[in-house]
Image (cartoon, rainbow, N blue to C red):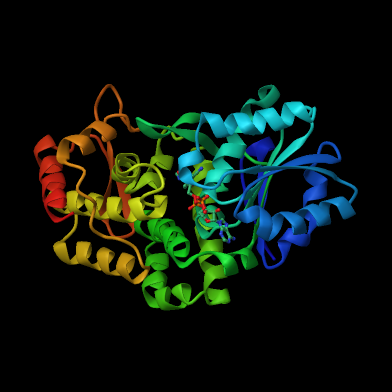
Length: 362
Ligand code: NAD
Ligand code: GLY
């Protein structure tokens, strides 16, 4: 097992990464305020892993309330959030009852938001079971739900007490979901870690083949990057925005296509290609750099051509991006491969060129 820490003062918390951690109630028990938890999961992950986690906790004397939600990005909404509150109230969950998110980013984001708002805040633990959740969404405390007009538009910053990533859960992950997680892994290399980007280029075939050591290395390195960024700027007043490379475009793709049609990681990959194209038009990187990024996404099994939503639809969805300030769009752009910055001065003409060329191809 490897352990990292998200350094947030009195709210600092550990990330444990390793094989078989679902059975390690001893790692969870010290973080519980009472011997009672609610485990929130879904109809796919529940049958696979709820039994194991529940038995481990029961053997440690912890009472478990299971809450099983429907599976899918389309359910990351108010109605599903309310199912969590219904169960918590029906079973008289208290302020000291810990919510445990067992699943991917959808379950993590929903459960975290429920924990932030139930009785104005109850303790919360992340047990991520997708690659995307193990390298990104379980760390950093962004929680929330989608709105038809904008992705992740309703939510709260609310940190977990613990992240427990059992790498063996990735054995059952569908290929397409593994690829989606790799989009966020590649993101860390592109935004701030050139040696990691080089490592990914050298080791992508091992990752796709689910080589255990390669996956463990990638998860650890990704969490280290994420933990450093979050510790420096928890509420995204500055540098945390870099974690959103490709997301302004990607969120437009997800909302525009209908939630769940394109996976989050797929939207991020195609969105990053749009950000790379815009970075080239701004004079930062060469076409050869853009092609190099595309090759890496392709090897990871990810799309590199954005769908044709129409230029105006892209612009409308992007206008509600969380980085918009005083009505002005801001973009995370590549300065070079391995370094990004937030640009508030992108000429509208260049953005239109990027979008119109993309929709002509998509
Ligand atoms: P997801 O939660 O929908 O999980 C993907 C699919 O895999 C689902 O069908 C799920 O049931 C299934 N699954 C999960 N674990 C499994 C396993 N071990 N074996 C078999 N199937 C399994 O998707 P995701 O990619 O994990 O997360 C995407 C979500 O995360 C998006 O909503 C995105 O906005 C959010 N996100 C949040 C943050 C954050 O910082 N909070 C960061 C990145 C993404
Ligand atoms: N996934 C973006 C962030 O956590 O800030």
